Amino acid sequence: MSDKQGLSEYGKQIMNQLQDGLAEQVIASLGALDAELPKLIVNYAFADVVGRPGLDLKTREMITIASLITLGNAQLQLALHMKAALNIGVTPAELLEIVIQMAVYAGVPACMNAISTYKSVLAATNVSP
Image (cartoon, rainbow, N blue to C red; front, side, top):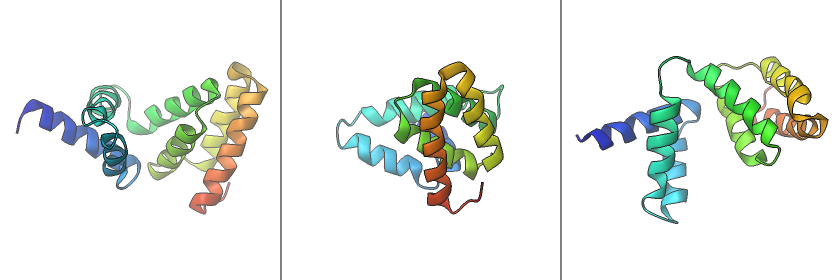
């Protein structure tokens, strides 16, 4: 196995911890556009960055959610990461606190958008607040 293969496997492993089958789903979707594009997500974003030592996956997902809320224009990614966070042990109460905290730093409109995403994620996953 080459180093790149090892990197890809590590990235896929992290992605599939967040959501079962996520790696294959992303690879298929992006690979249909360009054969090299999945490597940016799998190898760089997940293996090289998310897979770094220093922070656990739960903490990284919480930070990612906060960042996506502040962007205010990434609702699909926010929903994916909220679901992933629930899958790895972030509680619904913790998610809501992240959303509320971002009202101070991202503004009330970004918070309200995130609340809508939060509610739809809980409904889609059959999780109670």
